[in-house]
Image (cartoon, rainbow over all chains, first blue to last red; front, side):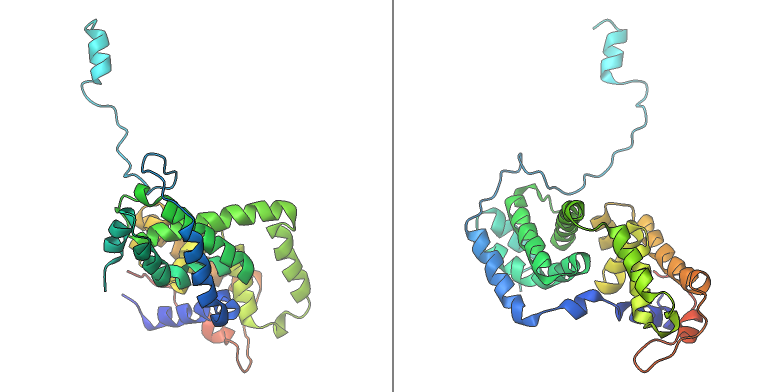
Length: 78
Length: 201
């Protein structure tokens, strides 16, 4: 729930946003053109090579029970 | 209007027009994030351009678990951090910059606009708290998105934000010893200090 006090505090903090002061609307369109033209010369990497990816869901690291397949196999001399 | 993920699918099939549409949609937000970090238009522009190129090059690695916007935020923030890290090696360190601000304001604290003080105090927060505060207040993002961007659990994102607010209040009240502040276009400190920092959903 957002109360009145929180809304006001946020508004005040928001009022110091440096992006508002530095914003240059005259250069926004130029930036878009620059990015899109740079993309023209860019190719996509394959999924295997891609270094930037989403975070994988972390799996629990607890020991499996009664034991991993490898440990069971070694115990059984396999 | 097509959803981001539909455009992502088209772009993955090689449609650069679809990716250009994503640039149009998200360029402003990414530029604002980069401006907050770089504090200079030209550097921010380079960061955003590099981020979109990285996003395009690595689009096939985007597995659509998070929103495209969150993924783009992650790339932009990381690109900015890397660039600023390499710049700080060449120029003045961040700590020295903060000190420079303090020296300038020393002795005339009562005259300093509260806006500048809030900004300086935000800059002194631990980076995770600063990031959560910035994404929540300046970018108006949900805690779910903030958690995706910061790669942390939902509750951690929320706690970082809350600690940032509490810390700001405490710094203003005790460290700076301010009790009152007035001015035509500034914020009244008396008013500011009475605001309760309450739970947010």
